[in-house]
Length: 603
Ligand code: M6R
Image 1 (cartoon, rainbow, N blue to C red):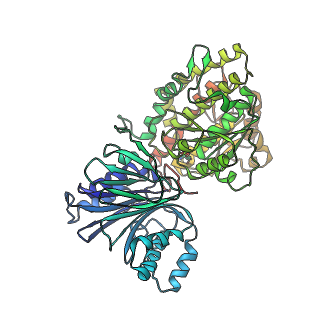
Image 2: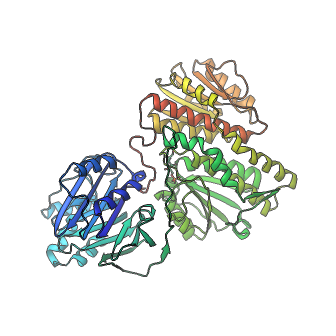
Image 3: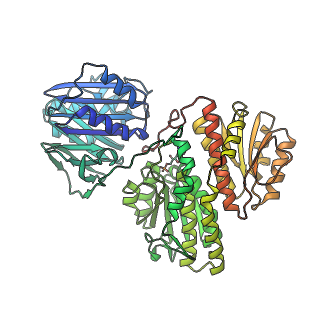
């Protein structure tokens, strides 16, 4: 996790670093810091919390924020892994001879730290990162050679990381290394300018060409030149930046819930034509001769994958399994080359999913990334990419990423069925008709929003929530529970409704809130019985259904439709609104909830 930026040049270094960090704030907002070297003078600023706190600190200092002398700088926005979010643990970490920012985890930091302590080094932070400056010092004391010391230092590090390091002895260069965590480098638009960032977003507008570093690439930048340890590939950067605005909504999350109608429409553009389904990005050979589909993802994307597994088996008639990426990586999975590997990710950077994808590729599997961010790491590794076209998602709690992923995967299930001739023309026609109706199910009606707002005040306490559903409404229940946990900090679990009687029903009492997903067109009678069982044991029931349910304590009526997938999206909106309104009432930060980051680039 974390975001790092670096700059060499004559523009306003502190502004460039801060602007860059703001673009990367989605990667963590526990603390932030910058270090700028100008004429051998080092200025360091650190602040706990969001970038705004760092900015305020710089503004109230005597630092000349307008300076346009030649300088070099590095910056960092942190999602804490080792050590609490304090100023002491904030980056850049400062050593005797070097200053460093780091994204990732140094897995062998404990051994290194012990070794360095034994040889007299004094540590001031609890971070894994601090070993880097001490290792550098250790080697520099021996050789007095910055480049060699940097190479000796990185040779000792294990884990996944990207690093920017500046030194006292050569205050005109930035050393860099990429291993596992993302790092991009660009020549700036001004003479001799060089920029670094964890993603290309901070570079857009300031540079035209970029290198997305591959693992194992290291080097240094100096005097407008970049020296790499191996050949790299330059690519053109997009010229204009997309900015997300709240557009009058209270939160990005709220805006993104309301946007779902439009982005889901976009996700279908050109892919559904008349009675045909087509993906220009997929060539038929990727999907034919496949005996199994394995989906791998994390968090909300995993829930979209789980939903899709029902659809792939039901529609495409292909065996489909779904794995949580962090589990998959270490279970020594049996991978066969007639399995198609699909990763799902909003960001395309989630470390566990990315590594799982690399593992599958190495085992010879064909792969597809279903992803929202073009040019992200996963899109560069997978054989093919299907973009979900959700636009920038700023809210840490995913909303429109999930709806677009689900729709795209559903369309892919139809495409596979078409290619493998497992779907009759009439059935394809019917499915496409339903798909076209999905955007309408995602329209947020005032009445519904108001109902969720009113109901939210009844759900601010209790000893827990169970979101229950069957079939695709089970992954939807998981998603509803995740949304609530993330932004309300209340305990919630998603459960298959039929499984409650095998244990969790023991928790039932009036302070156990059951959010029951009761679609009319998907095992209604079965789920009804499950909810009745909970009601009989005094659980407080909030039923979400188009059909009245007399045993419910609270009832949210969804629009009647004639297909369970339309009910799915109707209910998705309810769950998103409900969790958001509960979070608002609890006074939480809806868009940037505590302890989280938008993009999780550590395993
Ligand atoms: O970018 P990704 O889709 O790979 O991210 C996966 C999860 O980190 C993400 O879905 C997370 O669970 C969200 N905060 C959920 O709202």
